[in-house]
Length: 89
Image (cartoon, rainbow, N blue to C red; front, top):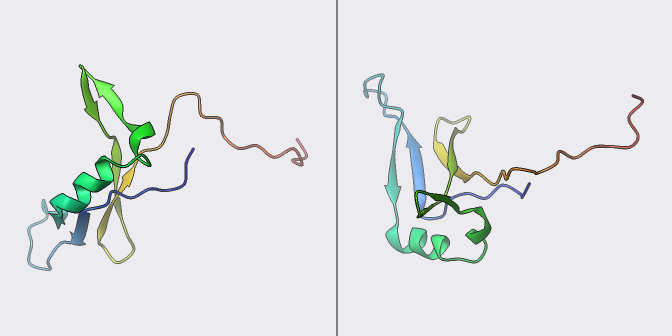
C-alpha cells in the first residue's frame, strides 16, 4: 500500500457551532488545484473503473481539531500486509 495521499484542491472544515446535527462540516474546491492533481502521474495508479467511467476512490477523515480531510484510497486487491519475520509465533 502506498503512503498517505491527500486530494489536492479540496479542503474541509469543521462544522460551525450553530450548525444543525446533520451538518458534518463544510469545504471548498480549488478547481485548478484539483484538476492538476487528478491529471498527475502520481495519482493515476489509483483510478478505478465503474461502468466504463474512471473514478478515484477516497476516504473522508476527521482530524482531532474537527476539520475534514480527503485521503486517496490507495488499497488495491492483492496488497499484502507487511509482516515481520522476528515475531515469536
